[in-house]
Amino acid sequence: GAVVSQHPSWVICKSGTSVKIECRSLDFQATTMFWYRQFPKQSLMLMATSNEGSKATYEQGVEKDKFLINHASLTLSTLTVTSAHPEDSSFYICSAPRTITYNEQFFGPGTRLTVL
Amino acid sequence: QKEVEQNSGPLSVPEGAIASLNCTYSDRGSQSFFWYRQYSGKSPELIMFIYSNGDKEDGRFTAQLNKASQYVSLLIRDSQPSDSATYLCAVNIPYGQNFVFGPGTRLSVLP
Image 1 (cartoon, each protein chain N blue to C red):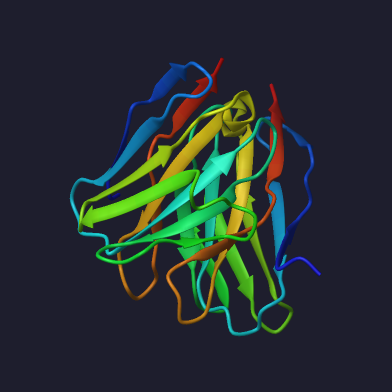
Image 2: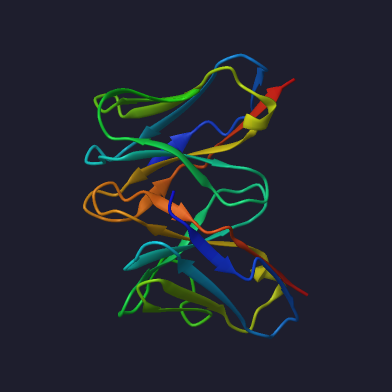
C-alpha cells in the first residue's frame, strides 16, 4: 500500500506553546490531505481538509485560528496547534487519498500530543 | 440519522469462528466502501474496499455489498486473537475525495 508518514510520532509540550505536525505522502502526490483527531475510545473526527495551494476547509466547530493548516507541496501538509492547552491532548492522524477512481485513503501513523 | 452506522460492540467470537461486521449508510449515491482495522493506539489500516454489489474476497476477509439495502459487511473467517481490533467502515462522499467513517465496531477474538 501507499505510504504516508507523520512526524513527530509523539510530543509533550507545555500549555501555551505551539506544536507543528508534518504529514508526508512518500510515494505518491496528494493534492488533498485530511486531518483527524481521535480521543481515547472514540472514533475518528475529521478536523479539516488540506488543499495544496489553497486554504484548508475546516469542519464545523474546529477553530481555524487554533489549528493552522498549510499544504505547501503535493507531498506535505502541516498542522500547527497554536497555544496548546491540555484539552488539545489527543491522537492526531492525517490521511491522503491515492487515486482518483476509488480514493483509497492511507493513514499516517499518527501523532500523540500531550499538553501539560 | 447518522450517515454511516455500525454496532459499537464489543463483538466477541471464539478463535476459529467467523466474525461478521455490519455497516449501513444513508447516501444512495455512495459508490465506494472501505473497511479499516485500527489497533488500540495505532492509526487505521486499509483492509479492503468494494464498489460492486456482491462479494469480494481477500484471504480470510470477505466484503459484501448490497446497494439496494444500503449495507456493507465484512466477514472474517478463522478469526484469530490478532484480529482483535476496532473495525471502521468508511463510505466515500459522491464526487468527493473524502470519506464518512462509521463509529467502528470493536471485535474481540477469544483464544
